[in-house]
Image 1 (tube, rainbow over the protein chains, first blue to last red):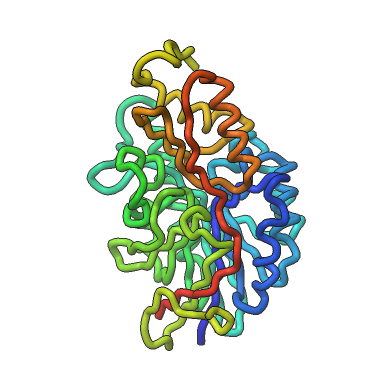
Image 2: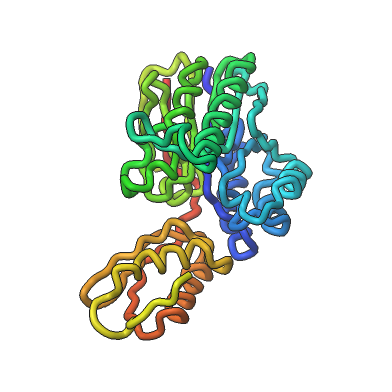
Length: 253
Length: 91
């Protein structure tokens, strides 16, 4: 059995973008069991922008699950943003998860925004000034909550959803100097601590699509500027013969 | 943000790239972190992808407003929003 997952991140909605995604989103009930949004739904994280997200991504006919991104925190209106999204039927994850009953099995999605810090051997340490310790502890707390959420789900297919990147592979194309602001290895460690099948993230607009964690979990950067389409669709299932990156859909010719 | 000097004379200031980068991220009317600023002999080239043509115009307007004498070329694109024609299969 196959579970079909649509995903996109970094759509940065405001009034000027409302309606651009909708024609493609209307096709989702025919091609996906759920839509996962990898954060940065808005430009500044205002309640008004969240209402734009609700108009664009609400009432799609498939479950919509999201994490927030750094942009969604900019105006300190996170509770209002979450309320608007949830009123539109969008599930917002932060250190928790959800299990959906799909035709192909039970899809479990655990999510956190995540944070920066860098990757093994070239990362920030919990040492020195209070500001530095607070920075690194934000990352480790987030990774711990992701690990806990992943392990708590009883499902057939487990997906990790973050905004920040769990591996450096999907940052290829970004300047090396900013990797520590784009993700943290602790997120990858959390993903590898559970039987995760797929990890989706955004945030790295100039990054690349595909990577794997050290434990072998497939990682996909679904930031909109990276995938350059309304969303990507992943078919995940044990009985699929082989991996295939660019398989044509029935309608795709 | 520190005021930039000598914008119209001689080679661009070493700090110009950082200043524009921060302007684009921190200006509430822009809020773009994904724009790359490249210095060429003929001036600056801005690369990146945004979600609407309005945002692209706003970036150029704000940079021109702050650095009126600086020649700026835009290679900023508006990201496509078509439905995918391909899927990825993961066993």
